[in-house]
Length: 349
Image 1 (spheres, rainbow, N blue to C red):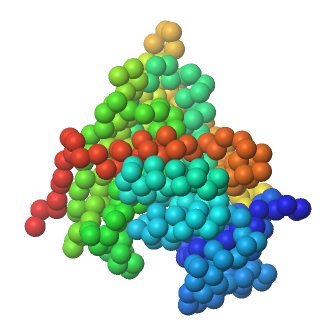
Image 2 (image 1 turned 120 degrees about the vertical axis):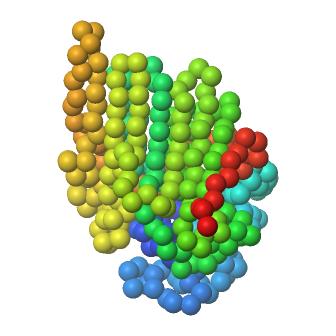
């Protein structure tokens, strides 16, 4: 494509291999130009034309690159996004975009000063299961929402092999900054800024020194009580989305297949991509005027992270508003870091 967005990735780990490179390569408006690989040179095996730089500074010095994807460890996000912006690049920044609201403000102010765009990578807005939840809410069938819970349940007792994820002194370590931005972004995109947040954190895996369980209650004076939960000590996952309203309830398991498909090297352009199994459809129960309950299966729409890259393209080339806003990111970081009314839990020794 003429005038394609020349794009560089700062890393080619799991995030780069699964969540960024396949979409940059498949979307006609992007050109996957370069990647930073300090040791193992793997990207060219799948993308023969890509340039593999040894260091971030080399990639940032490439004048042809217009967009830099910062997909490095959490504690480096702010520093590398700052360097990329100062080098005159637009930035697509992996979650968490920062570890404090002050850092978010700093980065966006720098982007404005440099006349460049800072865009957050919150891909799970394009999950099939979350898209299903959004459609059911928009349909009005639940009536006035009273209670909403979003969960990200896992059972992973072993400490992560990447030690920086398990070090409490490392900014952005622990599950709160790993899965928290996903479920918070989904909730905030639907319900906006809460009036108050109550945060509970825990450490339950043997030997854990960082958060491996969190629960955040988001209070909306004129809306539902919204709870977002994530845990690594949950052998039997609960429904990932539970919504109760005056006219009905909706329960939906976490069913998005994109990560599994990408891990099997399925192309985002494949016809089967993003289609979740029919047996994992959500269950919508509606109470009629006569008090009778009727439960029906709700097939989910196609999940497609290409929607995020389309939004990036539209923002960079056509000045369209980007759906993940600076304001929403500030709300997210405030919820993740606010010191008031927070509880700490620890595994009994």
